[in-house]
Image (tube, rainbow, N blue to C red):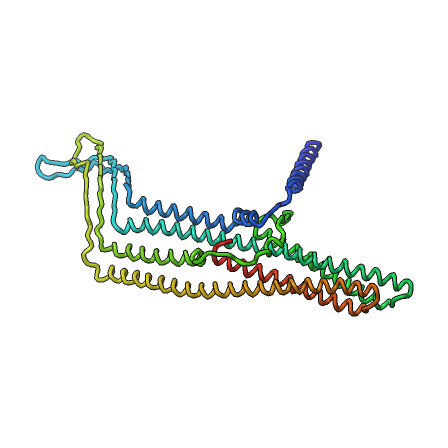
Length: 432
């Protein structure tokens, strides 16, 4: 009985110690301190999609080696044992051939090469290049997601900061009017009206806290980090909006992943056409065989040559139009790929123009909303001073405060618009 209790105690201590070690490990893990560039690098490094893309590249590389190995030497070996149960073949009076048990060791070495095999290797290399392009596209998506999430956190924090400033200014006015109410120089209604406005601001602040938490959760998801990781963002929002114009060289659209994939599709279709045409070409093969026999009996029986070497050249002559039909289909595939590229390029050019227009419009809206916000902040400060000296009513002050809140909301929305428009354009250019 004591032995069982001792085992249970040891197990309990082990469980508690393991849980404590895990807690300590989590607690000792420091915050994740990120600039925007480091956030994008972290997202690329920890993305599950990037892991899959890397595996696809490895798979394509092994497929290329498989294509190469088809043209290299292949060696097979066989080992067999045959018995005829002592049967003797009689071919005439006094002439017989024994069929003794025989063991055979056979080795065959062969190699085959033709134009289609060579083109298959080139197509395999292009398949690797396509997978690498897909990986670059995944990297671009990961950087775009990290950029949007990172800036969303900063914008959400900026939104909370503007609300805090408004509440502090309004609270000062509320404290002043409460003092006036206490000495009978103001009505309680004025204080109540401002208090209601403060309650509205408190609700907005709580909503801002939830928005910040949601933005941080989205950033953690984009980074591929643990859900409970503490984040410290070192960049300032002003850094990103000092210069909203994007200075890109001519032909920046050519750097688009989509454009590169379209070009690769055309090249692959052309290589596939060449591969199909090589069906008209000859195939050269070489084969060496060795067959060594061991007879189990008094007489060896009929001997066979142990070594043989064969050279063969197969030349296609007639296929009832099968090869011609395959070539025509491959030629049509090239035309389809080229047409799709032309069509998509036109669509991308239209998309580029639209994204540039969206960015220019967003920048104009941002500049206008920022100037409006500065004016409303100035009006609000002046109104607070006027309210404190009794030249305007509490209703007037609340109206001015509501206008300020609307201006702040418009300003925050303009930040989101600039961020989204700029990110989409840079994502198109593969320049994030």
